[in-house]
Image (cartoon, rainbow, N blue to C red; front, top):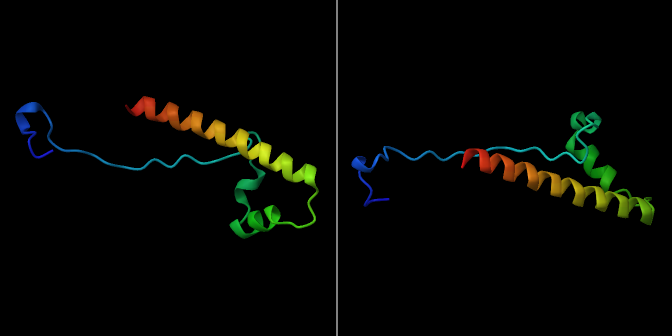
Length: 79
């Protein structure tokens, strides 16, 4: 950066963060207003069956894939 001068058109560099929220299902917004502790306790429930745990994991993987897609779309738009 030190060897770049104003004649090359670089006046300043901006750095910023963009927050992209993680939603497992964009249609279901009921969990948005829940507190963090309630969400955590719902996940750590020891009475869950194996099917429910596997379903939760699959929803997480699906949501993570959707999040990565949204992040790449935003990064392409800014790039």
